[in-house]
Amino acid sequence: MPTREAGTSSTDPRAVSAGRRILILHVRAGVGHERAARAVEAALRSLDPTCEPIVRDALDFSSPFLRTFYASSYNRLVDRVPRVWGFFYRRAERIPARSFRQRLRSAILAAGCRDFITAARRFRADAILCTQFLPVEVFSLFRERGLVPVPVYCAVTDFSIHPIWVYPGIDRYFVATEAAKEELRETGVVREERIEVTGVPIDPRFATGVGREAARRELELDPDPGRLTLLLMGGGFGWGPMEEMVEVVLRLPETVQALVIAGKNDALRHRLSGRVEGQGRRIQIHGFTERIPMFLEAADLLVGKAGGLTSSEAMARGVPIVALRPIPGQEERNVDYLQESGAAVRVHDLFELRVKLAHFLADPADLERMKANARAIGRPDSAFRVARSILTTFA
Image 1 (cartoon, rainbow, N blue to C red):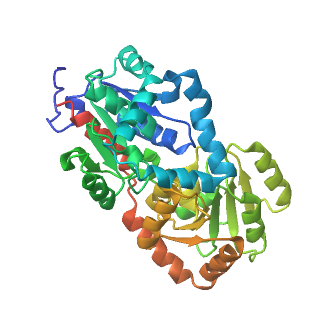
Image 2 (image 1 turned 135 degrees about the vertical axis):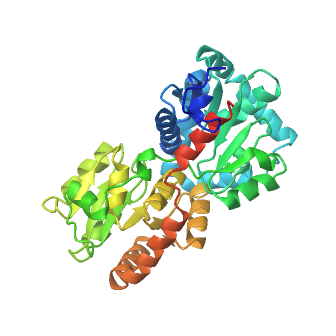
């Protein structure tokens, strides 16, 4: 055990975690799981500079088949046939966590991920954190078999609990809400003392800010607080009817300004840039960016995606969401929670989107109420909560 530094207490993570190596595993199915992993990495480094977080894609340690098809299959389903993904999501909910069928599935996946054990040894990990369900499932089985001696943690990146996250061999779960904690406890698989409500881990930069007007100036927008500013997002890959959403904005009064993020979809970014040519001061088109904290601080309303990370980031900035056709499954569940909290509305088509945006223009007080609701459920320090919990377990 490292000696305690002068001036530190037994509750200070630095007093017990010096030099600890934390292996953080995500999967590039979408970009949210990696963003959560990077958020915890940054929080660990901030809390304890001697800690060594190691972020990797879990698929790098899987079989060639899984590396080739696992993430790409999800991305294609969500982009092209989201209803099919929703069908599989709902079917998976019916498989009991302790059933023979589930155990067989876990064993098959583990056979394709034997190098997970090698990775833990090679990186000399003192603990492992998973921000996606594939490594959670595999490490749970390895942990139960005694093949992985270090603690394994899971950060659930949505607001509700799907059985695909739930396994008995995990040492601690970090969940988004009290309701999620209750859902997980009710499965009977995870004991209550192993569940901690931290929020979905988001970039530590969300714990600080410069203010809405300063953010708008930084982004070369009109800083007038009375001007409705929209942020249009389609996730890291520009999913959804982004072009049609921009058309809706173009038909709104010119007092409305917008930031549009096309993600890693360069073809979409070029098409959108051409469509708004000459209106750069009013509607800005951006590709993939690391400045999401600044973009959300400048915005009054987020239109588009309702993934767990994006939604958590929006709530941390007090930005309500208009969710247009959320992905069946986890995004629909996220929207259900946000609507119940008064921090989001769901629209089913572009006509409803136009009507809802016109409503907020006509009734800004309603938008302000939703902003207050968003702030009330936001957890801007979530990554620090996860990191602090991991570090203090070494005491």
